[in-house]
Image 1 (tube, rainbow, N blue to C red):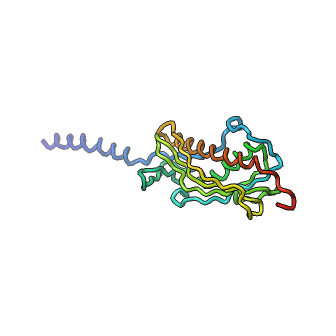
Image 2: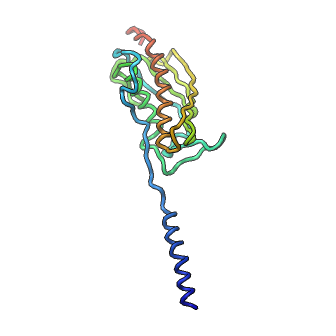
Image 3: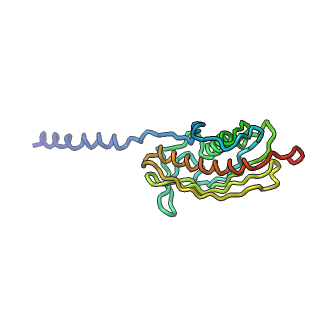
Length: 207
């Protein structure tokens, strides 16, 4: 009788321990970046090699300024994914992507992102104020922000625009969530570039 009970105990405990070991493993972390897109996916709106632009500073919500990817979980609640993180920082990614896109869209290499200072003549600065930039996997991403174009001296606001974009996600994966964020950011960048393309290069005394 004791032998049967021992055998039964082993039969129950061993699979339970194995299952606990499997369940106790942390999922492998994945790291994401907004990254650049191919130049043929961002056709130029203008050719302005003479235009000098600085992107930033950027105002950013504290709840987004973290390594974990943030998703929306209800009207007043967000969720942090410990297993899905930014390879660098979302703040830095946004600045670099806006600068890269503006350079391609305006046909100029004279674009720099904050906190770097330009080594070329600066004509305009693009200031960014993000209010919302997260989404629901399998549904959509929301980008809500304000961008402002100011003169090089920062004294005159030449354009101020509010954007509220909703970009659908292709699937419930975090890869597609980040891809939707990149697409929404690209839409905003095209609007900024279109406005910059209409501005003249300031006269030397006005810079």
